[in-house]
Length: 249
Ligand code: MG
Image (cartoon, rainbow, N blue to C red):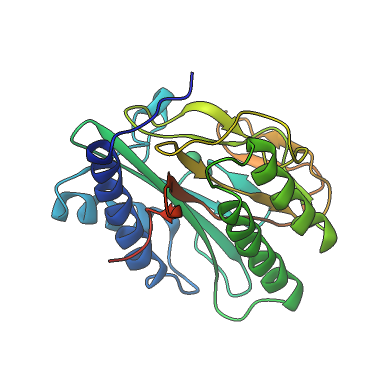
């Protein structure tokens, strides 16, 4: 069941999302060759305390960290570790905030130092896929319009979209209905209504769309070992069209 949110509820989600966006911005500024991914986790913990919020992912289904850090061929749900980032890596940071009974969720992919043109193109196209999906998030459209726009943009660029992990509704739960696949058919799926709030999150692969999960039971990697990028915004459907909640200020 897709839950319609009141303006008061959206305000609470907006607050979580703004803080998630601020924390991601601070983390992005720390990214440089040599930094260990666990240092990013530690910094995110400090920022959560400073903002008086709870990291949403910590303890979620037993995930031990507040921040997901997914490097290169890692798609999502990568775990912070002693691994140091290297020049030429691309790193995805996914962060969720819980506060006052509501959630906010956002993700970015950041180049580490100077990276290959193809990696930069993957990052850029994935970000564009997110905005293509957001632009379809309006009253009267269908869920498939979001999915199809994301898939079309990724595949037109020669990339593929992950099938096994999807975007989601967000509110009093981190993951609510509907599931929002990054592939689909225009005109299909539920009708979009004012008050729906979605976390839209294209995961785009350089090569095959197929993924597998590592023995840690969390880290999702591409089956062919090629790179993957990930961007996410939480978006409210309003009478004025889509409102991106997870932006700064
Ligand atoms: Mg999400």
